[in-house]
Image: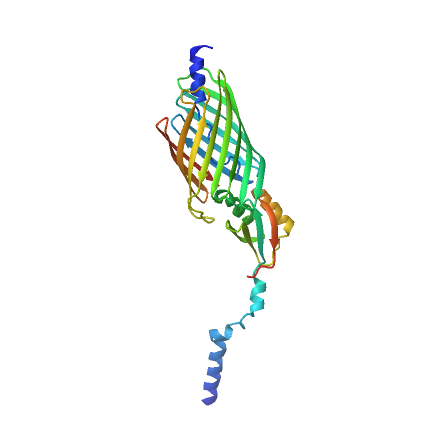
Length: 111
Length: 211
Protein backbone atom coordinates (compact mmCIF):
# COMPACT_ATOMS: atom_id res chain seq x y z
CA UNK A 1 0.00 0.00 0.00
CA UNK A 2 2.77 2.35 0.92
CA UNK A 3 4.53 1.51 -2.33
CA UNK A 4 1.33 2.12 -4.24
CA UNK A 5 0.93 5.55 -2.66
CA UNK A 6 4.53 6.41 -3.47
CA UNK A 7 4.09 5.35 -7.07
CA UNK A 8 0.84 7.33 -7.34
CA UNK A 9 2.49 10.42 -5.90
CA UNK A 10 5.42 10.10 -8.33
CA UNK A 11 3.03 9.74 -11.25
CA UNK A 12 1.04 12.80 -10.15
CA UNK A 13 4.14 14.95 -9.89
CA UNK A 14 5.51 13.86 -13.26
CA UNK A 15 2.21 14.54 -14.99
CA UNK A 16 1.61 17.90 -13.33
CA UNK A 17 1.71 21.08 -15.46
CA UNK A 18 4.62 22.35 -13.40
CA UNK A 19 6.75 19.44 -14.51
CA UNK A 20 6.01 20.17 -18.16
CA UNK A 21 7.39 23.70 -17.97
CA UNK A 22 10.75 24.21 -19.64
CA UNK A 23 13.52 25.77 -17.66
CA UNK A 24 13.06 29.57 -17.64
CA UNK A 25 14.86 31.45 -20.47
CA UNK A 26 18.02 33.28 -19.57
CA UNK A 27 18.00 37.07 -20.12
CA UNK A 28 20.60 36.66 -22.86
CA UNK A 29 18.47 34.11 -24.66
CA UNK A 30 15.41 36.36 -24.48
CA UNK A 31 17.39 39.29 -25.85
CA UNK A 32 18.75 37.24 -28.71
CA UNK A 33 15.23 36.19 -29.66
CA UNK A 34 14.17 39.84 -30.24
CA UNK A 35 15.11 41.53 -33.51
CA UNK A 36 17.73 44.20 -33.98
CA UNK A 37 16.71 47.82 -33.34
CA UNK A 38 17.92 50.59 -35.61
CA UNK A 39 17.73 54.28 -34.78
CA UNK A 40 17.88 56.42 -37.90
CA UNK A 41 18.47 60.16 -37.91
CA UNK A 42 16.41 61.57 -40.80
CA UNK A 43 16.23 65.09 -42.26
CA UNK A 44 12.95 66.68 -43.36
CA UNK A 45 10.74 65.16 -40.66
CA UNK A 46 8.62 68.25 -40.00
CA UNK A 47 5.22 67.24 -41.31
CA UNK A 48 3.11 64.49 -39.75
CA UNK A 49 1.00 64.12 -42.87
CA UNK A 50 4.08 63.52 -44.93
CA UNK A 51 5.88 61.39 -42.32
CA UNK A 52 3.08 58.84 -42.69
CA UNK A 53 5.10 57.78 -45.73
CA UNK A 54 7.98 56.62 -43.50
CA UNK A 55 5.73 54.19 -41.69
CA UNK A 56 4.21 52.93 -44.94
CA UNK A 57 7.42 52.49 -46.92
CA UNK A 58 9.83 51.37 -44.19
CA UNK A 59 7.16 49.38 -42.36
CA UNK A 60 6.30 47.58 -45.55
CA UNK A 61 9.73 45.98 -45.80
CA UNK A 62 9.70 42.25 -44.99
CA UNK A 63 12.50 42.58 -42.41
CA UNK A 64 10.70 45.23 -40.39
CA UNK A 65 8.51 44.45 -37.38
CA UNK A 66 7.48 47.99 -36.53
CA UNK A 67 8.38 51.63 -37.12
CA UNK A 68 8.10 54.62 -34.79
CA UNK A 69 8.65 58.19 -35.98
CA UNK A 70 9.78 60.86 -33.49
CA UNK A 71 9.22 64.27 -35.11
CA UNK A 72 10.76 66.13 -32.13
CA UNK A 73 14.12 64.40 -32.51
CA UNK A 74 13.98 63.81 -36.26
CA UNK A 75 14.44 60.10 -35.61
CA UNK A 76 12.93 56.90 -36.91
CA UNK A 77 13.13 53.77 -34.76
CA UNK A 78 13.01 50.55 -36.78
CA UNK A 79 12.45 47.26 -34.96
CA UNK A 80 13.51 44.33 -37.13
CA UNK A 81 11.96 40.88 -36.98
CA UNK A 82 14.04 38.25 -35.16
CA UNK A 83 16.67 36.82 -37.45
CA UNK A 84 16.15 39.51 -40.11
CA UNK A 85 18.62 42.15 -41.20
CA UNK A 86 18.50 45.48 -43.00
CA UNK A 87 21.77 47.12 -43.97
CA UNK A 88 22.38 50.86 -44.09
CA UNK A 89 22.17 51.04 -47.87
CA UNK A 90 18.79 49.29 -47.93
CA UNK A 91 17.45 51.54 -45.17
CA UNK A 92 18.73 54.63 -46.98
CA UNK A 93 16.91 53.51 -50.12
CA UNK A 94 13.65 53.08 -48.20
CA UNK A 95 13.95 56.48 -46.53
CA UNK A 96 14.63 58.11 -49.90
CA UNK A 97 11.64 56.29 -51.43
CA UNK A 98 9.51 57.82 -48.68
CA UNK A 99 10.82 61.26 -49.69
CA UNK A 100 13.32 61.93 -46.89
CA UNK A 101 17.07 61.99 -46.34
CA UNK A 102 18.92 59.55 -44.09
CA UNK A 103 21.67 61.17 -42.04
CA UNK A 104 22.95 58.34 -39.85
CA UNK A 105 22.05 54.93 -38.41
CA UNK A 106 22.77 53.73 -34.88
CA UNK A 107 22.69 49.98 -34.42
CA UNK A 108 23.81 49.86 -30.82
CA UNK A 109 20.38 50.68 -29.46
CA UNK A 110 19.45 49.27 -26.05
CA UNK A 111 16.30 47.20 -26.13
CA UNK B 1 -11.67 91.36 -78.11
CA UNK B 2 -15.40 90.58 -78.05
CA UNK B 3 -17.05 91.58 -74.73
CA UNK B 4 -18.21 88.07 -73.89
CA UNK B 5 -14.68 86.71 -74.19
CA UNK B 6 -13.39 89.54 -72.03
CA UNK B 7 -16.01 88.85 -69.41
CA UNK B 8 -15.24 85.13 -69.60
CA UNK B 9 -11.54 85.83 -69.32
CA UNK B 10 -12.02 88.04 -66.28
CA UNK B 11 -14.20 85.44 -64.64
CA UNK B 12 -11.67 82.76 -65.40
CA UNK B 13 -8.94 84.98 -64.03
CA UNK B 14 -10.86 85.04 -60.79
CA UNK B 15 -10.32 81.32 -60.38
CA UNK B 16 -8.24 80.51 -57.37
CA UNK B 17 -4.76 79.08 -57.76
CA UNK B 18 -4.97 76.82 -54.73
CA UNK B 19 -1.93 76.59 -52.52
CA UNK B 20 -3.03 73.61 -50.47
CA UNK B 21 -1.68 70.12 -49.77
CA UNK B 22 1.32 68.72 -51.63
CA UNK B 23 0.51 67.11 -54.98
CA UNK B 24 3.03 64.23 -54.78
CA UNK B 25 2.84 61.45 -52.19
CA UNK B 26 5.22 58.62 -51.30
CA UNK B 27 6.02 55.95 -53.89
CA UNK B 28 2.97 53.75 -54.33
CA UNK B 29 0.62 56.15 -52.58
CA UNK B 30 -2.82 57.32 -53.67
CA UNK B 31 -4.24 60.74 -52.85
CA UNK B 32 -7.67 62.32 -53.10
CA UNK B 33 -7.78 66.12 -52.96
CA UNK B 34 -11.10 67.96 -53.02
CA UNK B 35 -11.50 71.75 -52.98
CA UNK B 36 -14.61 73.89 -52.65
CA UNK B 37 -14.95 77.64 -52.64
CA UNK B 38 -17.27 80.34 -53.91
CA UNK B 39 -16.27 79.91 -57.54
CA UNK B 40 -15.50 76.25 -58.12
CA UNK B 41 -15.34 72.73 -56.81
CA UNK B 42 -12.59 70.38 -57.90
CA UNK B 43 -11.38 66.84 -57.37
CA UNK B 44 -7.87 65.59 -58.01
CA UNK B 45 -7.30 61.85 -57.62
CA UNK B 46 -3.72 60.85 -58.23
CA UNK B 47 -1.23 58.03 -57.89
CA UNK B 48 2.46 58.49 -57.12
CA UNK B 49 4.54 55.78 -58.80
CA UNK B 50 7.66 57.39 -57.34
CA UNK B 51 8.38 59.89 -54.58
CA UNK B 52 8.87 62.60 -57.23
CA UNK B 53 5.97 62.07 -59.64
CA UNK B 54 2.23 61.74 -59.54
CA UNK B 55 -0.43 61.52 -62.22
CA UNK B 56 -4.18 61.42 -62.06
CA UNK B 57 -7.58 62.78 -62.88
CA UNK B 58 -8.46 66.44 -62.35
CA UNK B 59 -12.05 67.66 -62.59
CA UNK B 60 -13.15 71.22 -61.94
CA UNK B 61 -16.72 72.47 -61.98
CA UNK B 62 -16.57 76.24 -62.31
CA UNK B 63 -19.79 78.00 -61.35
CA UNK B 64 -18.57 81.43 -62.42
CA UNK B 65 -17.66 80.24 -65.89
CA UNK B 66 -20.50 77.70 -66.11
CA UNK B 67 -18.15 75.08 -67.40
CA UNK B 68 -16.44 71.87 -66.39
CA UNK B 69 -12.83 70.93 -67.01
CA UNK B 70 -12.04 67.22 -67.08
CA UNK B 71 -8.52 66.03 -67.72
CA UNK B 72 -5.27 64.55 -66.61
CA UNK B 73 -2.89 66.28 -64.25
CA UNK B 74 0.78 65.42 -63.89
CA UNK B 75 2.79 66.68 -60.91
CA UNK B 76 6.53 66.62 -60.53
CA UNK B 77 8.54 67.25 -57.39
CA UNK B 78 11.30 69.24 -59.05
CA UNK B 79 13.42 69.77 -55.97
CA UNK B 80 13.25 69.01 -52.26
CA UNK B 81 15.49 70.25 -49.50
CA UNK B 82 15.46 68.09 -46.37
CA UNK B 83 17.10 69.87 -43.44
CA UNK B 84 17.25 68.82 -39.75
CA UNK B 85 14.30 71.07 -38.83
CA UNK B 86 12.71 72.11 -42.12
CA UNK B 87 11.68 70.96 -45.55
CA UNK B 88 11.35 72.94 -48.79
CA UNK B 89 9.78 71.82 -52.06
CA UNK B 90 9.28 73.02 -55.62
CA UNK B 91 6.61 71.38 -57.78
CA UNK B 92 5.59 71.57 -61.40
CA UNK B 93 1.94 70.94 -62.30
CA UNK B 94 0.66 70.28 -65.81
CA UNK B 95 -2.90 69.57 -66.90
CA UNK B 96 -4.63 68.89 -70.18
CA UNK B 97 -8.23 68.01 -70.93
CA UNK B 98 -11.67 68.97 -72.16
CA UNK B 99 -13.69 72.07 -71.33
CA UNK B 100 -17.47 71.58 -71.45
CA UNK B 101 -20.04 74.34 -70.92
CA UNK B 102 -22.81 73.55 -68.40
CA UNK B 103 -25.48 74.41 -70.94
CA UNK B 104 -24.07 72.02 -73.53
CA UNK B 105 -22.36 73.03 -76.70
CA UNK B 106 -19.00 72.45 -78.19
CA UNK B 107 -16.30 70.79 -76.13
CA UNK B 108 -12.97 72.62 -76.30
CA UNK B 109 -9.44 71.55 -75.62
CA UNK B 110 -7.78 73.21 -72.64
CA UNK B 111 -4.85 73.02 -70.28
CA UNK B 112 -2.92 74.62 -67.48
CA UNK B 113 0.60 74.83 -66.15
CA UNK B 114 1.72 75.81 -62.70
CA UNK B 115 4.62 76.08 -60.33
CA UNK B 116 4.27 75.68 -56.58
CA UNK B 117 6.76 76.03 -53.76
CA UNK B 118 6.55 75.54 -50.04
CA UNK B 119 8.78 75.60 -46.97
CA UNK B 120 7.91 74.56 -43.47
CA UNK B 121 9.15 73.81 -40.01
CA UNK B 122 7.03 72.29 -37.26
CA UNK B 123 5.79 75.79 -36.43
CA UNK B 124 5.79 77.85 -39.62
CA UNK B 125 4.50 77.16 -43.13
CA UNK B 126 4.81 79.30 -46.26
CA UNK B 127 3.76 78.46 -49.81
CA UNK B 128 3.35 80.06 -53.20
CA UNK B 129 1.41 78.86 -56.24
CA UNK B 130 1.40 80.29 -59.77
CA UNK B 131 -0.96 78.93 -62.40
CA UNK B 132 -1.55 79.80 -66.04
CA UNK B 133 -4.65 78.51 -67.79
CA UNK B 134 -5.55 78.32 -71.46
CA UNK B 135 -9.12 77.19 -71.98
CA UNK B 136 -9.70 78.12 -75.57
CA UNK B 137 -10.50 81.83 -75.71
CA UNK B 138 -10.18 82.10 -71.91
CA UNK B 139 -6.66 82.68 -70.71
CA UNK B 140 -5.65 83.67 -67.22
CA UNK B 141 -2.80 83.87 -64.78
CA UNK B 142 -3.21 83.76 -61.02
CA UNK B 143 -1.03 83.70 -57.92
CA UNK B 144 -1.69 82.50 -54.40
CA UNK B 145 0.43 82.55 -51.27
CA UNK B 146 -0.07 81.17 -47.79
CA UNK B 147 1.41 81.80 -44.39
CA UNK B 148 0.64 79.40 -41.56
CA UNK B 149 1.47 79.13 -37.88
CA UNK B 150 1.01 76.06 -35.66
CA UNK B 151 -0.37 77.20 -32.28
CA UNK B 152 1.01 74.02 -30.74
CA UNK B 153 3.47 71.37 -31.89
CA UNK B 154 1.85 67.93 -32.06
CA UNK B 155 3.65 64.61 -32.12
CA UNK B 156 3.45 62.03 -34.88
CA UNK B 157 -0.03 60.56 -35.12
CA UNK B 158 -1.65 63.25 -32.96
CA UNK B 159 -4.21 65.90 -33.99
CA UNK B 160 -2.51 68.81 -35.73
CA UNK B 161 -3.85 72.36 -36.10
CA UNK B 162 -2.60 75.25 -38.24
CA UNK B 163 -3.89 78.82 -38.53
CA UNK B 164 -3.31 80.13 -42.02
CA UNK B 165 -4.02 83.07 -44.26
CA UNK B 166 -4.20 82.76 -48.04
CA UNK B 167 -3.78 85.77 -50.32
CA UNK B 168 -4.64 85.45 -54.00
CA UNK B 169 -4.02 87.80 -56.90
CA UNK B 170 -5.98 87.59 -60.13
CA UNK B 171 -4.83 90.41 -62.40
CA UNK B 172 -7.68 91.86 -64.38
CA UNK B 173 -10.43 90.52 -62.08
CA UNK B 174 -12.98 92.78 -60.47
CA UNK B 175 -11.45 91.97 -57.07
CA UNK B 176 -7.79 91.43 -57.97
CA UNK B 177 -6.71 90.60 -54.44
CA UNK B 178 -8.64 88.35 -52.05
CA UNK B 179 -7.78 87.24 -48.53
CA UNK B 180 -8.91 83.95 -46.95
CA UNK B 181 -8.14 83.19 -43.32
CA UNK B 182 -8.44 79.46 -42.72
CA UNK B 183 -7.79 76.65 -40.28
CA UNK B 184 -6.06 73.44 -41.29
CA UNK B 185 -6.48 70.24 -39.30
CA UNK B 186 -4.97 66.87 -39.87
CA UNK B 187 -4.69 63.52 -38.20
CA UNK B 188 -3.21 60.45 -39.76
CA UNK B 189 -4.01 60.33 -43.46
CA UNK B 190 -6.79 62.96 -43.43
CA UNK B 191 -6.35 66.74 -43.83
CA UNK B 192 -9.25 69.25 -43.70
CA UNK B 193 -9.22 73.01 -44.29
CA UNK B 194 -12.02 75.46 -43.56
CA UNK B 195 -11.91 79.17 -44.30
CA UNK B 196 -13.74 82.29 -45.42
CA UNK B 197 -12.89 84.65 -48.27
CA UNK B 198 -13.59 88.13 -47.01
CA UNK B 199 -14.00 90.01 -50.31
CA UNK B 200 -16.30 87.40 -51.84
CA UNK B 201 -18.26 86.51 -48.72
CA UNK B 202 -17.75 82.83 -49.51
CA UNK B 203 -16.62 79.79 -47.53
CA UNK B 204 -13.75 77.52 -48.40
CA UNK B 205 -13.67 73.82 -47.55
CA UNK B 206 -10.94 71.48 -48.73
CA UNK B 207 -9.89 67.96 -47.75
CA UNK B 208 -7.11 65.58 -48.67
CA UNK B 209 -6.86 61.86 -47.95
CA UNK B 210 -3.71 59.82 -48.51
CA UNK B 211 -3.76 56.03 -48.62
